[in-house]
Length: 90
Image (cartoon, rainbow, N blue to C red; front, side, top):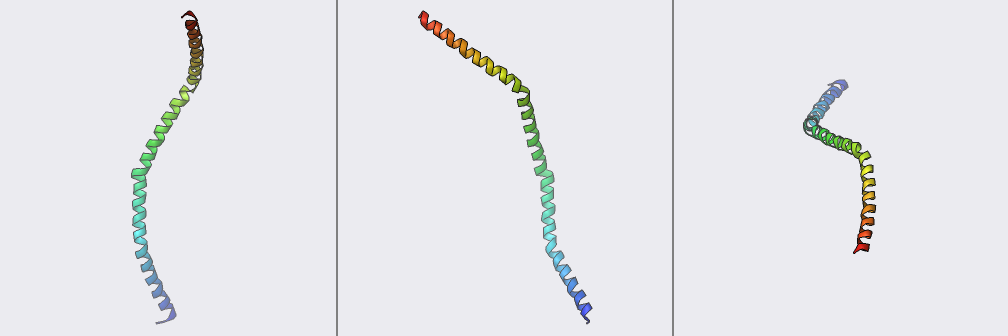
């Protein structure tokens, strides 16, 4: 056998060994891709949709919250004044 034939034989043996070691990695990668595609991505999309809806609700009511705080502050003042008046009458 010549040196070239030996090198070619060694190369083929290494290729077979590499392919046999690579196959389990390819299988795991395929399973991982399928898990991501069929399980994790739909769940993430659902979580994103929930957070987006909640954000939109909060954003839409943020102006009303300022008004509500102002109303509460006014109610506190009125209740305090009325309580003072009632205490004077009692």
